[in-house]
Amino acid sequence: MELLFSLNVSYEAFLPYYQGLAEKVQVRDHHGRVLHINGKYFRPYLTPQGIQGQFKLVLNQDGNFKSLNKL
Image 1: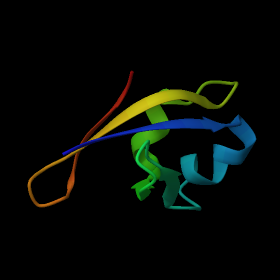
Image 2: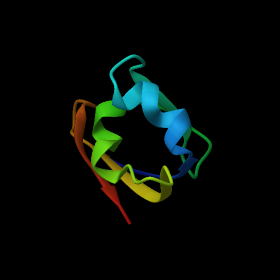
Image 3: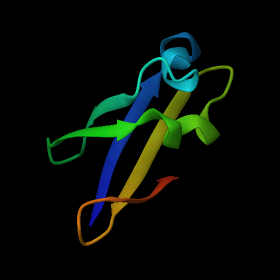
Image 4: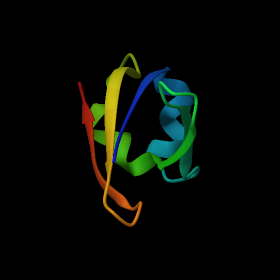
């Protein structure tokens, strides 16, 4: 299953997730579904400006994380 969503969060707002103090990032996909994604998967996309862009979350057949890619 592939889920598409946008994310726009500042560097300061994402720090608790980067540091492991907060765990799940809540986003809404393009179909309105609320997703809770472990913040560690966003670490490669963190810049000094934060995290901005379109993302694709891929889940396996059991609904577990497979990959997260910036589009």
